[in-house]
Image 1 (cartoon, chains in turn cyan, purple):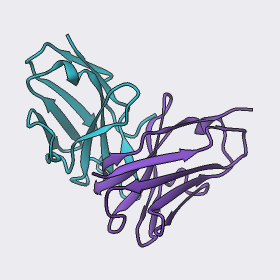
Image 2 (cartoon, rainbow over the protein chains, first blue to last red):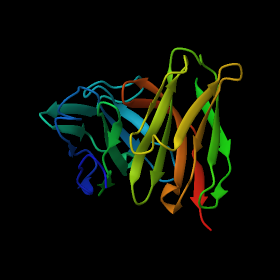
Image 3 (cartoon, rainbow over the protein chains, first blue to last red):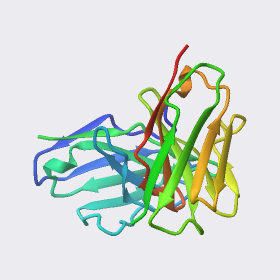
Length: 109
Length: 117
C-alpha cells in the first residue's frame, strides 16, 4: 500500500493530452513543494520527468508539465507519443521520508 | 555523464543480511546524496534511505532498525546492508543519486534480490 494515491490507468490517442493525479496529505504533497514524477518502461529504471512540482530536468521535453493544488499534484503529458506508453510514478518529500505513489499505467491507443 | 553500477548477492535465505554496493563513475562523488530505493510488485517503489558524502544518513522510518548505508569515498562507492531479511524484502534494489530533495536523477541498473528458504 502506497502513501500516495494515483489512478491505476490512463489512456489517450497520439497527439492528445493525458493528466495523471497524485493525491497525498498535508504531511507530504500538500506540505512541501518537493513533488517529482517519473516514467518507467518495462525492465528499466525510472526516469525523472519533473522535480519540485513544476521543473523539468535538462533533456525532458516541454510536453511534460507538473502542477499542484492543495494535497494533489498532477502530471500532464501533451502531444502523446508512442514512447509515452509506460508506468508513471509520483513521489513526495514527507519530512523524514520520501514516499511514492503506486503508479499509473499510460496506454497510447 | 554519471553512471552507477551496482552488485551484490541476488538470493538470500530468511534472517540473512542483504549487502549491495554501488560504484559511481563519471562524476563527482562529493556534494551529493546517494540513495537506495527498492521496487516490488506488492509494494511498488519504496525509498530506503540516503547518505551524504559527509557521512550523514537519512533512513525510511519503517526500515531504520534494519538498514545501514555506508560509503567509501576513496573508491567512489556506497553500500546498503539490510539485516534479518524476510520474503517481504524481495524486490529489485536500485542505487541512485538525488538531484534535489525527493528527486532521483541518476539510477543504477537494478539488482533483483530474492529471499527464499
